[in-house]
Every structure is written in structure tokens, then in C-alpha cells.
Length: 394
Image 1: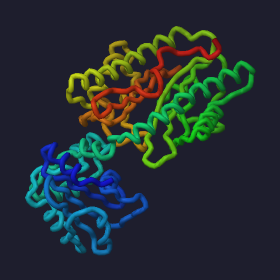
Image 2: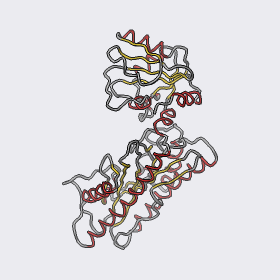
Image 3: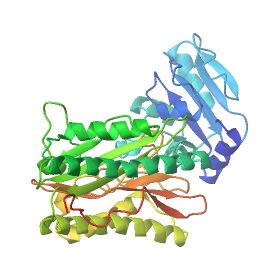
Image 4: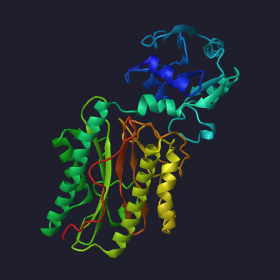
């Protein structure tokens, strides 16, 4: 729900003169969400909405779509010609010096850099300094309320229990010499989700042997593998409640289809688990000390463990991603590799911690979810983190 008082308080807290929201044909979904624009409302012309640190917001809309922002407060200016639009933008930001937009210099963080270079040039031409709006976006897009936190915990029960069902199915069929394929295990997991009232935007990853060394492997019927005794299996799954505003739980666990896990698999898993735990410890220590924590700092703490063990080149993705109504949410990612994530880890946000080591013969990833509550308490969800590779036939 759009809350002007809260938004303006956040703008002032960040030392800004205002926040300029802009969209053209759905390119800036973040701006649309901030102004509570329905997903079904498709506009064909540019609109701008300027929220000052204090005072009345100002709108700029096209003549054929004059009501596009009527659902939010503020005065309205209508444009028709391109000259009117440029003059209108200047009027919106008149008197402002530091203004937030969904823009990051050099596109250093594309997850919230949604405003095109030309629009940035236009706004800057009026003497305005543009500041990345990443932490503002987090406050109103990525921070959960109590209802969402409760829905996450509900979903986490079913994502965690899905592993008992999936690994149990594999063990049972292998013992009975019944062929079982990666895609069949996918369907078992999806049936478990359906039975328990949760849903996923995509089917889970079920990856056996060398497939587990591909972080985004996607099994397909006719191009998947049998799971047999002696195989290593990685399962990455995610789901959310079938309720409005529900948020995801996203977990990864691994297992060995045999009676005794090879030493090599246990050794690699121990390194990955230590890296995971180092990331969690970094979050807990920062919030306990009331220190500002950046997403890149969590990634650095995690990655240092794997690099020290000599496997840095095999950890090929960020440590974690924001979790929200989409499994990859719009808050800070735990990333110092693919981007330098300089957004803060904020209270009431959730993110994954999922380091991995991906070798040609197998890959190991251990994923948990971390939620920071309003008081700075740090919660790891989805059950206790995995501490060893289980032998499914043991």
C-alpha cells in the first residue's frame, strides 16, 4: 500500500531532496510497484512521479493517459509534445539537488538500474544529482511485514519436507531396482507442493552426477538422466504459499545414492558448509554490533573460505540473492563477484546464502534462507542447515 508519510520519511533519512519515479511501457516494474500500479494497467506513454522530501508530490502524464496516476496524491501536469515533456520534467525537479532514481552509474547493479541513459541525461540537464534508489526500493519492495514472515515460515515447512519425500523416493526406487529419472523426481516434488498448498514459478532443479556441476542445470524429459546407486544428487527447490503477497522459501540440499559417501564428496561439502556458516556469522555479528552491513561484505566473508581452501575458481556465482514475492527479489543480493552490491542488508529483509563448488564430475551447493527481523535478530529458516552428505542407502 502506498504510504506517502513513510516514503517521505525515508527520503529525508537518506539525505535526499526527493525521489523521481519514472516508467515507460513497464520497463521499470519497481516504480510501478512503489506507486501501487496494478499489474494489469498497461500504459503506452511515459509518466513521472516526483515525491519531495516534504510537501505535495508532483505528477507528469500524457494527454491521452491523463488518469494514469490519479490513484496517488499530488498535483498533476499534462504533456503532449516532446517539448512539453522535457519542460515538465524540469518543473518536477525544480529546486531539488539530490534526487533518487532507479539508476546506478555504469550499470554496476542491473537488478534495480531500470532508467535508461537518455532519461538520466534529461534529468541531469536541470542541475540535479541522481542518487541510486536501491535502499529506498528495499524499504518499500523488499522489507516484509509480519504476515509475509509468517507465510515464509509456512512455505519453509513444505520446502524442507520436500527433501524427505524426494530423497525417500530415490532411495526406495533404487533399492527396488525401479528406474527413476531426474524429471520424475521433479514431478514428485511438484506433487508434494500441490498437496500442501504451495507453488513455484518453475520446476525444481534435480541434478545427478556431472549435472550437479552446472549451477543452473534444468532437466527436461528426453534429455535427463537416470539416478542410480553410486550417484551424487543435488536438489534446489523453492515455493511460496498460494496467497496474495506470499514470499518464497528457497533451499538446496545434496545426497549420495549409496551406503557410504565417498571421502571426496564429504571434503568438498565441508568446505561449502563452512563458507555458508561464515556468511551467516558475518550477518549475525554485524547486526549484534549494530554495524552497517553491505551485501558485498557477506559475499566476501563466504568466498574467502572457499578461496582459502583452493577452490575459488569453482565458486562461479554470488553467495546469495534477495528473496521476496519472486524467488529472486528486489532487495540487496549477497554479491561481491558479479556486481559490487553496495546496498545495505536491512531489517525485515530475507536472502539466500548458497555457496557452491562446481567440479566437472559433481557440484555441491548448500542453500539456506536468512531473515533479519525488525529488531536485528537473524533467523536461518528451512530447518537446521545441512551438516553432512547423507548416504541414502545406508
